[in-house]
Length: 327
Image (spheres, rainbow, N blue to C red):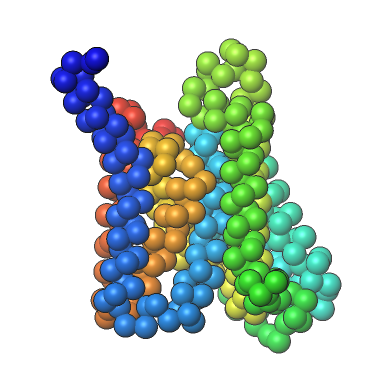
């Protein structure tokens, strides 16, 4: 039999590991339970559906950022790329083009700019922090050039708006899009060779390269997928609002980053992971909705969001004994 001291140490280690992996998730569940009980109208079906729909835009955008962070690169262009993709989709719909053309164009814009970011990082050797900020500025300028600062608004065809507002098998299309992206991203990272190579590239770039992994290709793939997710989030947002403005995705930028960083404090501490990102996106939207219903001032959300970002990075650094990510 093991000495009692060893048994006690083993139990303590398991408890500590459980807290590190699931402590934040449990806190998120308690927060949701709090608003269920104490926030008036929070538990109404209409409000819960609105939270789920709003979470879908954030989750898709955040999953893209998580895929970029998986290969240890930052994509700070996601919001501006999404806004440009939405503007292009809105312009095409406004010009009576087929909704499928608008959808494909938005995805192509996001994917193309993601590939451009990857080219900048791997070929031009520009740090992702710099190249994605540059891409964000370019995308913002193009969006304002196309719209001249005026949003596209109109009675758009149901073939386009139905992408977000419609239902399939009685389930909101937005929720299905979110679930589909999350499942696809999870399977890619956890069950494919490309996903394993992306993870290895992010954790130890040079070691992965020496092991024969095409690290430059992995970085291009990660940033391209981030851009594609931004394009998808954009077209769904435009379809839901029946409008497209040059800064329409700006409010999601910090929330997307916060969702990924908060997700890194649960399930796989210190690593960007899809389940954590998805749950964190839900918690952030629940928090925002609950604070509004409780009558909190608008600036309280910003203060809480900033605290979440700093606390998440600090927690990840503490768990991994190294910076949460490098730029």
